[in-house]
Image 1: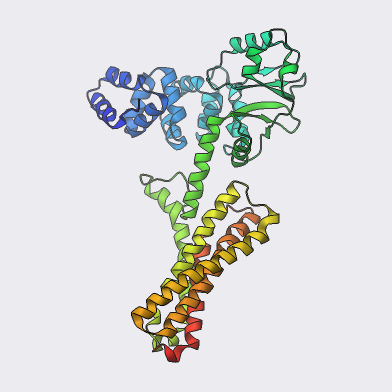
Image 2 (image 1 turned 90 degrees about the vertical axis):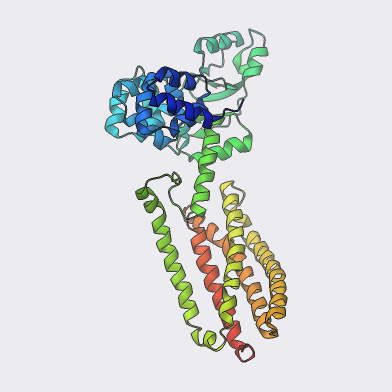
Length: 449
């Protein structure tokens, strides 16, 4: 059943105000992990610090695993070292490494020194969070080729994994190099004396520990994998990434692209983020946008005499610039998405540019014709409607081209194509729109009064 978290949150806060921690703990214990984390995130900092140590260790670990990284790190840094060490011991190694990586180096080392088995976590902390090594878990079972199916099943029982999502078991040779993968269903249904090497598929899809998490997610979705092994440069099995981690990556990458398209550089921001964080993430792009707007104003200033003689032009110049910007933004969204999914190859650049210019031309003709007719019926000036229609054809054609060229250009310089696309595209389409419209108007000026 879907939990009504709003109702439970009210009861939970009432219990905490009465210092009835037993009732508060009971409300959380009956919930699923994500629901626990959602409710916990709504509590005040003081309530979180006081309540978390009183929960069962497994529940506390689940909450820290499901909280957003900044929130989890803030909460962990507020707890005594002994308390956070006991909770981290209950966490999945990859989640524990992520949490410790968000703490200060001194705090992380202090917690590591108190863990029962720090070597499960320590190797994972050397990899960046946004790499395959940062996503992988060190909790996996490696089989040997000469094991029998019965021995493999017995090893799986002894391992007794916490995760319920075990679909594949990976096989390594004597040098611990990845050499095969076994489907769990095949292993269970096989005759007891069947060797693992007879059941395994030697064609294993794997990723290197250093590749970006987005590339890792793309590989898993392309091959429809529920888990993927991570290897080093020599092919040694280092860890395993499961699909639940990749879902988080896809969400993070989508959020990042949306924020970048809106000119917000920090994808962790939300309306409740601190004032300083919001200023830092948003102000630089507003400065850049101010510069591009001033450039567009400079373009207009070169036609002051034209506008002064035909003030009616001031009414319609924003129509040309706005429609060009809308067309370009559509192409930016398509191009950024296609680049993120790896659907654009260098060989297809020219074909894409030609097609988008042709599409922009058709869009410009369609919009320009309708607007020209409407303006003629409104103002009764054939030349004004002609200038406006032609300007729309030109700006929408060039806007479609710019909307693809800017993301592709940023990508070629290893810059996130979503990061500055909208600012640059808006600057280009506004400036081009004003220039095209006012240049055409200057040629027909005597007919526009």
